[in-house]
Image 1 (tube, one colour):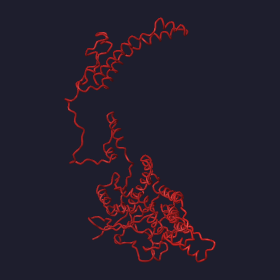
Image 2 (cartoon, helix red, strand yellow):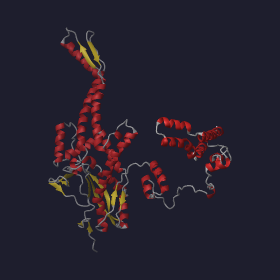
Image 3 (cartoon, helix red, strand yellow):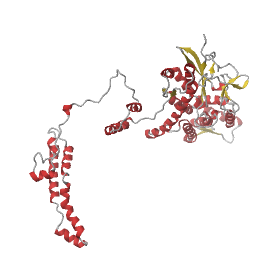
Image 4 (tube, one colour):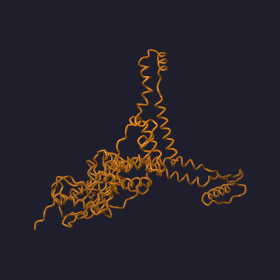
Length: 532
């Protein structure tokens, strides 16, 4: 029986014999040892500068140890770094399948990314955000008629080294080999986040944060010493001019004992004074320096400071949170590129052969949606003809596609009997006045809203609006007697005095306006009396 040859995405053969063997295993001693001496203890500026210089030259073991210790000792850095990593790790990956990818490949990849072990491995790759790179070893096995990744093992970054020429290609650290060994294809996922350009080892957030860590370490030590002095008042012992050396030593022992035991005995001729220390100066000096370094670490890690500090308003935090979303979107996109390149393409190629198109895993980071504003906009625009995709609205609102057996929420159906009867258009007011007279209050001349208003609970606002609308129907008949004389005077008068004389002879006629105001006032008074 001939065993089919496995091919990678590049079309080259893949050895199936070593797919399940562990490669980057730790050792008791040597270059892949787990135990390492502490680096952060007694860290000085010159020592830190040397560690960072060695790292950029390819000797990053001490730097990686320092990065690990910073996550243990520098609490603020550990908090904001965890916030950034969990922003992506908490998202369930989705799959994008280009048009033309067979359904069997899509189903296989969908099953792969839904596995909990895969999602934990992807989260482990995010360790590269702090250190510059992260590596997960993949173990393969033949199960259920497919070659599947059955194990994901995060490997210590100190087990690897960069090639000495470009300092960009990661290699496995091996005892006896200065340059290390090549990483076998399909066996490792290597994630090198790129928040900026440059050597991968210099991109990690631990590098700039290390200076803040050193400054804060010195500041905490000095503040602790200051707090000890401030906690116990400063003691001054006084002795007389005739005091012997024995008396002086006795007084010094008494003063020293007060610092630790808070009790001492001295001769009556000796005097001890206590001087208070202003403790607020420590908060102003040391506390301000620590807050300053913490703010800078938040800026380089999250891109902002509002959401990592107390006292910020909701509006400020919401504005600054958008910056975090931009960073998270970049982190999710780069993580997807690593997983697609180092795992999914190999999984598909070894099982279904090299493809021109491959499914892609994604970690979508969406901006918060204003659901109320979206719903209001759709409710206003759809009735006027805007066509909106239901799928898009569901995605933006976070609603799933309803299943066949799901009970659906629907708008209540309108009964045909509940529709109000159609009304004939109202007769023009000028025609009604000519037929009935100005003072008529019959059903045709009274405001329609007055006649239709329920007798139990009349709506005064609606009645007033209806009366106002009725009064404005013949506005031109009211304004013409007022404005026509003025127009004629302005058209014929040649001087101001002549215009005044013409206006006195034939001034504006306000009778129609007075009549309309009287009717509107009477109707408004009736509405007010009927709705008290």
